Length: 329
Image: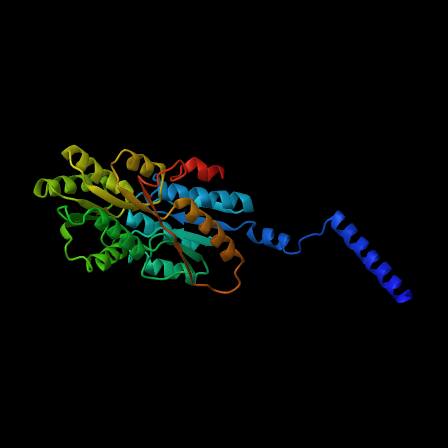
């Protein structure tokens, strides 16, 4: 009996000590080292250009994370010039930021520079468009999967009872978004010989070129059923040509899911977007920056962004995003 009472009193005493400790709070031993790891770290972003939804969204996500953790962030904007982008990367290699985030114009132009950057001890994240050289991290779309999803969407609309004629509007042919998306489209079309590709041209990410190409295609094929385009901003030109011609063409595009897309779907200009969702990519980007800063060993990581369809059937108030949302939240 005495032993039972003794054990009960001991347990009560230990519970009291534990309760007192929790009431006073316990410091997290990993928190301060985590916060200290980021102080003074430098992040540099070299996009294709600023001023459109993708790069503005990613930059807002990086800046928010940098501000939160005490890092510095700068943008070197080459404004669509590959030469200017190469010069910016070359300059950054000598300045040695801790992390560079690179949006490649194509698979070859920056490859050697990215290798040099990593050899200089700079950790490199490739954002949404890959180089032939694999750096520490790739974050972005699975372009082959995007192309497959686009082709399947068009085929659903351009089956029996239609002309089964489609066009393909590529961007820059050597860019990952075009080359890999085209492979995905080809994977699906190989199973559907009934689909007739009447035009497969490159508009170089330019909405005006896309508009002119589509206008010509519609003159030659007024019964065109569908269009697969590899970027929504470019495909605003495709949609403009279709509208001007007074035709009904099911345009399936891809992009980051900004508000412009929902507006165009609602207006009937776009049939569907395969979206890789910039806010989600921004979250991945912020998390991977944290991981790279803390990493003690080299890493090779790919984070392929999940995609979703934005179309008239699922369109809702939260289907698309605005830049202010990323900056605020």
